[in-house]
Image (tube, rainbow, N blue to C red; front, side):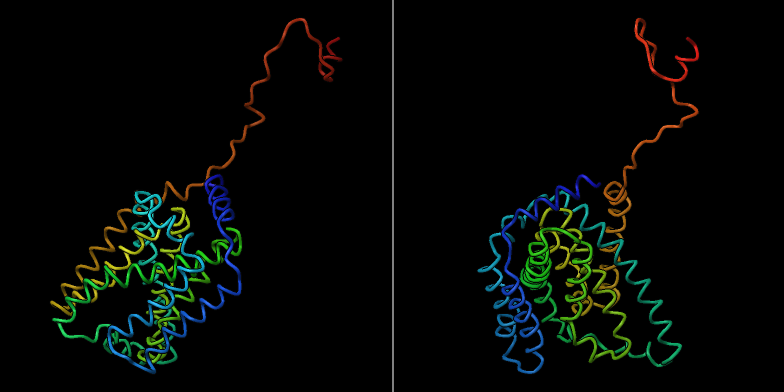
Length: 297
């Protein structure tokens, strides 16, 4: 595994370096457009163009070549890793979120009831939900993976020359969750649950991006499918939506069981037991300076 990580570090270190100032401007634009829609709504299409269009246009100009040249790299590996990491980290995220909620409940018994509020992102009619399913695959998934994995995480890798990628993956996943600030205003203290789940999802996609060498195509499809299951519940019934999401997570767990152990396996150096190690073969006609040879003489 260490050889693969060294190769990936070298690959990202050889990419075009993104100036820090441009990266900071990009971050400000991402957060400003994401938060701005909650204060000034221009309509569905203008809001999409504002939230996704401006950051993507900026990212394309300053860093697009590096993002696009690796966007469909190692699709098979990205599929194996993406689904596996999604399944494993989603389950871990749910577990951590439940534990966090139990702790919070000790101080605020009403906290679990806050989660009964409807998700503001799913506040659409069934007819609109069918459209949103397509939007999830065609717009939201690709756009958010370009912004958050391609520019936000990929930009950090470029600036750091591929070093400390785990720390950078965690940092960008926290920023990814922070963009979804509306959960805080909706669920109050209980918003820790969706925030933990968002960090887990973001981390799964970041690791997929890094281990696949910069692929965002597969994370975009996984992202779109995940969001689509939520709208499927609105378009049909909550039960159908939950089943669809459960199947998606189940598939991810199968991929995790098959492929992740191969990826994270550490090859420890072989050691020999001095007591069982065989002595080197004796070569006739040669002498040694070892203590044993002197005693024998």
